[in-house]
Length: 407
Image (cartoon, rainbow, N blue to C red; front, side, top):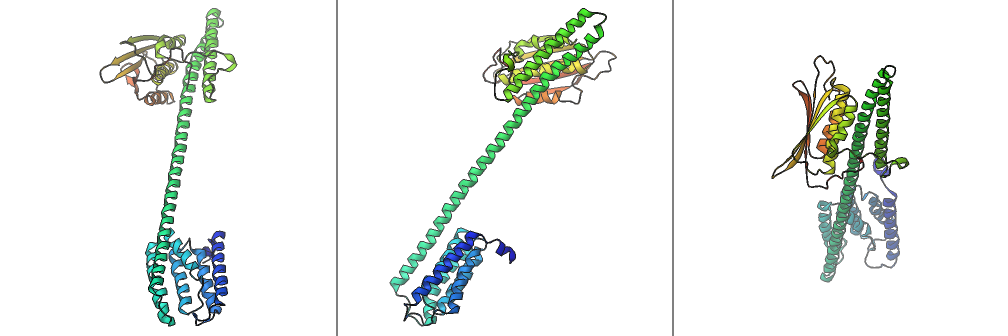
């Protein structure tokens, strides 16, 4: 009971009070001028019945299937006791409309029929008044049909509005989910770019720093060359990181007016392997088939896969030998580029094969391949380790030769 009382809103209470004031006030005023129709004057019992009918409306939204029968009983009791007539049906109309709006037809329709028979026939029989003439019965019937149809139309309109709100909410939720998905993909792409840029450059810097420290006293010229490589690699890494951050900020202008290096591309395969060679890895390259124009995503993914695979060779393989093979295939149904990076494990080497690091190297390469509809396989082979990527060549805008790096 307390929960039901606590659930009453100000709007519910205001409607109930307004209906009660109108019913009691107007009926009291009209009763003063009724001399022949009622046989009972408006007393405490009449006020109580009208007040109960109005008071029940505070629960019309929470319990519409119970409020309507309660209001009907109170209103019918008032009429059967032959109290003065007046706007005594307002509470009943409000309760009926809300019952329809909440879909309680199984309660509303029988109450409508029983109410029609009771107020037109039963009340006249009990109070010894004349039955309403046919024109009045027709008018009451027409009024009740208007009430029923109007309630149903309002309910249908509310259903349409509710469905529109639901659809708008679904669209908003879908747009939010899509925005979160795009943001997640962008973060993942930026993370891959930063990983590829930093891992490749820092690996080269680490190797050359070791060379410089070892040869600084014995061969200062070679140490100077190693430091020169470190300077160039660190500068390129800084510019590439600035380009990624500029893209993240929504700009394409490099910081401090620097001109960043072109984005890695399979068209410049020798430029990619040049850094690996500087780190001490002997890389052999081979291109099979006629080079095909590559979409931007496939070109960047392929270049990054070669770059990351060679970085893993330099950092983890314990070998100085690697081979990069790029093969272009085209037939009537499809075109693809196959990238294969092999490294040979030197006899007696204790180092792990390339990619066997437990880090983000191979997962990152696989994500790049899958992002453009391709596949990547990485694993041991007899005498070494192999990374093989297959990237489809779709009809997209080819990559510009001097495109700036974009995540």
